[in-house]
Image (cartoon, rainbow, N blue to C red):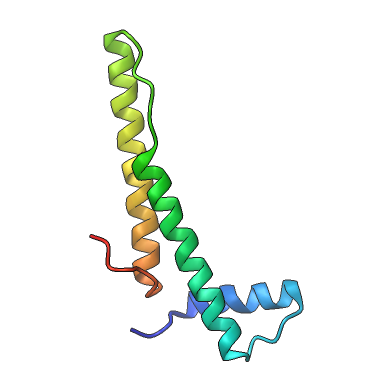
Length: 91
């Protein structure tokens, strides 16, 4: 899969900010790998986050709402990684 323009533009912005050569292919590959690792780490954090339930029905409802929100965020991060060709094949 090719690299999306958004990915390349983000890389070039980063190069401008850090005064690096945006034509360096090895640097681009390293940048992509670190970005993919960061996205994967974010997904792992969201999937393993423990939400306190408390001892009430309201606590259980709040927990489920929080978990639903975390799943939505996880799915958005997965979609971002996939759209940029950086997904590691997780479902």
